[in-house]
Amino acid sequence: MSEYKKEGKAPLELLSPDFLREIAKALEIGEKKHADNHYLLKGVPITKVIGAAMRHLTQLQEENIDEDTGIYHTGLAAACLQIIDCFIKDPTRYGHCDDRRFNKLDREVGALCHTTPELQKFTHQVGDGGNT
Image 1 (tube, helix red, strand yellow):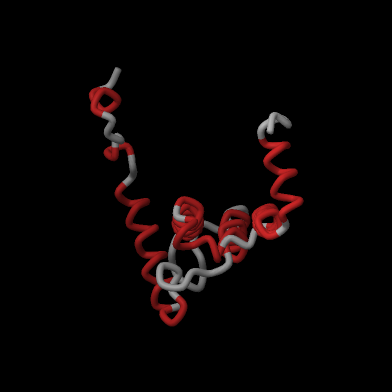
Image 2 (image 1 turned 120 degrees about the horizontal axis):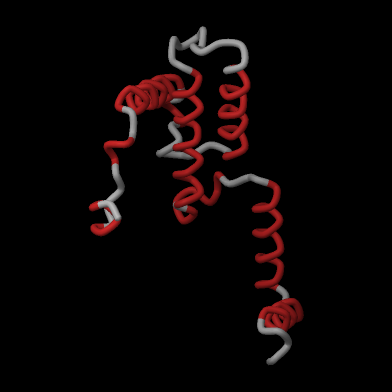
């Protein structure tokens, strides 16, 4: 067992410094490009960021470096994934950004269940196997 596993620390030396720099460059360009609507301040729809990540990954089949920014598509895609990760792991702050279909449905059903006494009773019965 590695020393890190014993201590519960992540082995950060396994990360490529060059790759981390590419991600930082991508985030810096995004910050300049979207200063008025920066993802950390206001957030953006998560599906928009997923689409951007997918476009950069798809573009890798044709080129390594993004023509517009001069940054590797891998770094741009990873920056998108960092933003998505941030949104998913902090729903209190960024829950309003999560516009994925399944999440919308969960929120709508949850809101409906909390406002309708009959549905509240039903969801409690279903949730505990009908033992109430």
